Length: 438
Image (cartoon, rainbow, N blue to C red; front, top):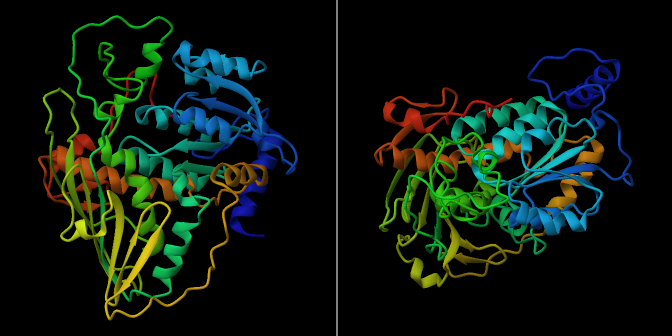
């Protein structure tokens, strides 16, 4: 029996016996349904936290299961969804969801700053967890949750759905890169045009909270700020208290491809430059260029990856006529990809070799998580160990920018850049009383 299987059996038997276990284990009280085995045909009892926007899409993705809890801070968003699921209990505070012991899993689709509170509480109760990208709001949380997920038998999935897009495009790119068609890849570029929905906002001392909004629960662990409509429900992404701008919003979708294909680990150095380019008080820059350096991995060479958004682009990018793309540069050729297409350009002008598919087709991003939860299997394709690694790298770009646009010499083990003490306050968030991590 494998160590993983042994651990799952240990957790199951301990829960059944009511045995006390270490706080770091993925354990809940003996009444937690997640401790019980599930057949493939039995429906999971799920709580969905955040039911509008991405939450609505994720709810649709798990609608085959028993939706027994709905949670949203906004009563106006909750009302129509609650009518669709009249059997579901409703809450406006995610902490109350975690008081229940009849759940198998939780789907988290809240703003970034509340992800970790919900995720850690669910993992410690032994629940399967699906969480929107980016997995967390700060680098410390990525390390914390990545380790916690690695210690548990919980099925987890981060919601970067392009990884399992029905086209299978990312799979074909990974197969091509790993087959050595391009030769050794040492340079990667990722670029995006600016987001058109960037909304400028101005901080105010006081504004009226709309009826039906549990604003305290929406703030969650973030520092108290008077309510202002520029914060929610979508534009929270452009304030450091709640989000991480375009880099945090899209990094996991695009950087997933080079991380997967090249098996990247934590970067050894990160350098971000950017500019706001707007008149509002929004914290985040409208445009950025972030350089990442990754060390050699076994026989794989070191990699220099650059992210661009909001204007900056790599030299020659205009020739590809892509508003957003990933470009791999190898010793023998280049590969250009977006979400659903890719093209290979061999340096000698020859046709690219055909690579036979080897990565199995996806059953669907949500379905993969559901099936894993029923098996008690933590090894989904976008599990939290991988999601934490991917998210942390992206967030380090924001740390570099906030620390004075300084190049960080990064020690992932210590969560510290020895050359830049100014980065420390941006590596770990602070939490309001009552909203600390479990």
